[in-house]
Image 1: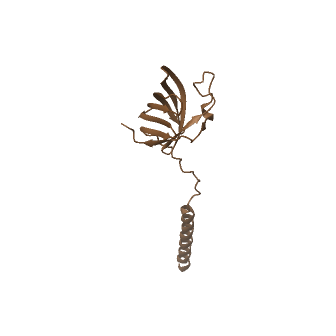
Image 2: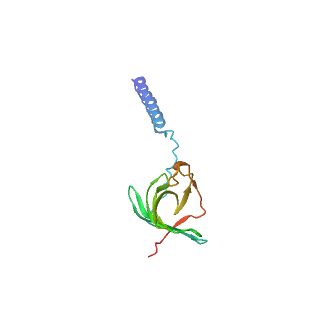
Image 3: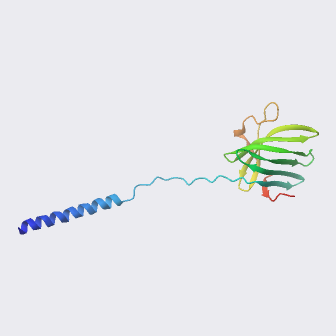
Length: 157
């Protein structure tokens, strides 16, 4: 009988050890995948973005951001005619691309404009134009120059 009790005791010890081993193996952390943190998209806010230096003054006042971005855009570049008009575009992958309809020398014109949203700045994009000179041939291959960055400011009354 003692042998039987000893055998049962020994089996229960062995069984409990195996259970502990199994639990330890089961509780080991699984290999985790390395996931890059999501890139934060620059935010575009309603309000004014301006550049004012070296005799050049540019103001983009964003008045509405929904499925379209709407606003007013004014250029007063040194030694060039001033243009005042409206902007209507879309923001996609940090690029604000839209149509600028403006009055210049008494005539209404429309041309495509693009801005890269970078922090609290908008950097205008340039590229080859189509044969009419009013739209970019390839909006995905624009060059963004920070020589006249528009910075978020309070709108002037």
